[in-house]
Length: 394
Image 1 (cartoon, rainbow, N blue to C red):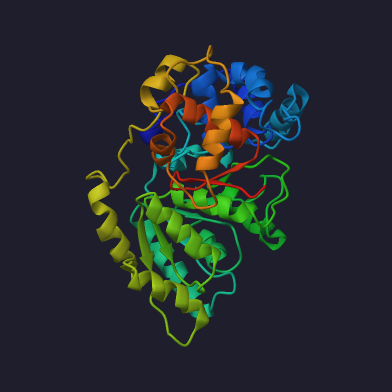
Image 2: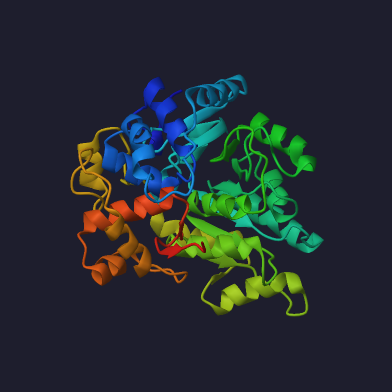
């Protein structure tokens, strides 16, 4: 594929590296943060797979399940049969804005034309039970944004999401799935998925290819929606809704958040009105978004290249770009039980920063990072999108 614009830089993984990355991220309790820490500590995904049992021996209540070569090869074959691709962070066609978020997914499965990632993206989210007026506004907004050169990102749900995708078929739409590419949800949107691909759009997911989405997977999808975009617009949203989660995540990532005002008598407007009270940008027409995002774009209206973090298997490069992690890779031994217990006691159900843990325990930063990695792999930590860490209930 021809590499253009924001996709022209990066280092491609070898087939063996891609297999190792897939095995590592699909292993028990390995998320984006622990994946990055493991490679920084061990030097490569292959070395991390070898060290995993040793790292959790003293903290895990049961042996860690490591994704097998056979399981990874089966997923890679299924992805290939579907005409999709598994793209690693730091490769040329990995979405550039996704790379800028804290702990981006190391691997994403993508079906469609990845050159669309070079267009400046705007996320559109809102109620599944959206009103006819909100859907009509969404369609007009999205057509106007498309005419101004923006790609549209949304979550492939009913209501506002579906309206946004349909209206941006001709100008570029990106659908983020909560499950695997082979398990799109909801099923009534399957014809829409085919239309997205036929019109040169993109389907993307961080989940395993055959993964059936669960309730807890939708906030993860919302994180990807926010991370993919320069700004996020909420059209209709109740006071407690996934759209407000997306807005919070977008704000934490430094993205601009827009909201459409609505009647205080309509529960579907309570969430957007609250966003406006809390500082979101009022949205009544596409020009509101165009004006707010204009300073972030080149003069020709395209998204500038972001420097970001280029992830390779070179541990020296990782450690140079991802400080502070560990002082030295590969030869350090896991912490003793006393240090781990000391760090565990410093944690609670209230989120805290790693720096606060280091100051409280007065242990070396490398020892704290390593202990947190061990506790994370043992399934005892919860990591927030803001980088804070909490202890999960026993």
